[in-house]
Image 1 (cartoon, helix red, strand yellow):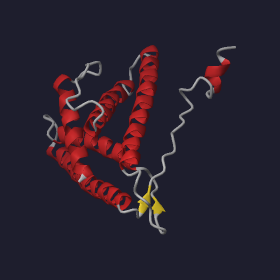
Image 2: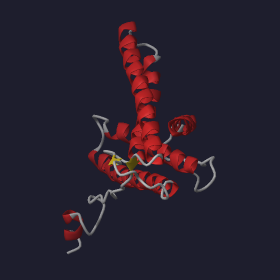
Image 3: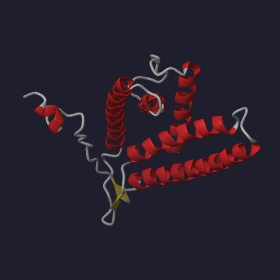
Image 4: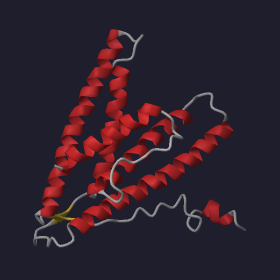
Amino acid sequence: MISGLCNKVFLKAIYDYHLYNDINTHYENPYEVASFENLLYTKCWIDTAQWHMEDEIRNPVIDPVVALKWKRRIDKSNQERTDLVEEIDNYFLNKYKDVKPVYSARINTESPAWAIDRLSILALKIYHMHEESIRPNVSEADLDKRKTKLAILLQQQTDLSLAIDELIEDIQNGEKYMKVYRQMKMYNDPELNPVLYNSKK
């Protein structure tokens, strides 16, 4: 099943990142270039690094100048993340391009890649909630609350994985069809963000 592969690659990317636990670490993707696994690994690495960027910017005593630098870096990371999601959707579009949808075929609320994007973020939540559930010097009551949250996240991972596998199966069978609407993010585009294009004048 596709979700099992995704979860396996995501877990590897998260654990590989935390061997260094450094946002600036240059990583080596262990999967073949242009492979589906390579895309998944890169996607999750970006998500993992951005998770820690978001931690940095939430520091209540952060210097505003430093915060702005993190904000710009997060914007850049978000664009890279979006680009990777679209590459993953391109993989599925190409893989199922010869499938002819049945007359009653329906479209899904999101593409496979955007569902897989949520699965990547969920893997990160599970990793970090697990860390919090075994953190030393925390009361048993608080640890129990975190373990309850972890159990919910794990159930959500199971449910989302099943939903992704069912979506892919429906696409394979022509019972659902894909459309990919490019994100067309405006905040990074110097031709579409008025603050950016007015700054050129």
